[in-house]
Every structure is written in structure tokens, then in C-alpha cells.
Length: 133
Image 1: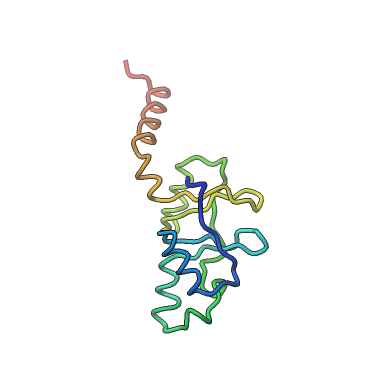
Image 2: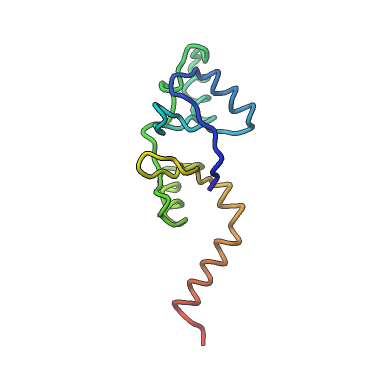
């Protein structure tokens, strides 16, 4: 999970959101309303909901085109639950939220980066539950 994530206010324009994404070299922003996570704005949202329908990104607020309601996973859940949610919704990014507080964002990239650790952990669990003799 990435604890360092970018966020943006829901009232900001799609153009400003895209500039933040480009400046930070990222493909998503967590959308906040009064400090609470309410949505996620992705590159895909910009392409499908703004550019492809020829909306003016200067006049479109993030709240109009963000993906919402925000689908999240609890920080107490294990990685397999996060993967299950991501697979169910075809997500590449999943905010980790509890009681309205965002702890970070779990991404497909995180899974790839830490696959060896995850695989080793799975093998340890298998051996623990089914010892080879």
C-alpha cells in the first residue's frame, strides 16, 4: 500500500486535476470533500467522461466525473481481500479507508512489486497448515 498519495478537492476543474496528475506523474487522485474521501479521479475518467465527449475540462468539476461512491478496503483486511475487491470491480487502485480516514492506496503495482513476499507468505501458511512429511 502506498501511504503517500495525491488528493484533490471535488470542486477543482478536470483540467487542474489532470495537471496535478502530470506534475506528480501519477494516474489517479483521491477526491476529498471536507477532508473526507468521496471518490477517485483516474486517467480513465478523464478520457471517457471528459475528452471523448468533448467536454471543456476547464468547466467540468472533478465531482462531475470522478468515480463515486468510493469503493474501499479496510486496513485490517488482508491482501487477498483487497485483490478480491479489485478483481470484482476491475480496479487497478483501491483506497484503504476506515471510519472516513484514508490510510493509503493499494495498487496493482504494489502487488507486482511485492509478489515475491506475498508468494513466500502463502507458502509459509500452506506449510504451517499442511506440513509435508
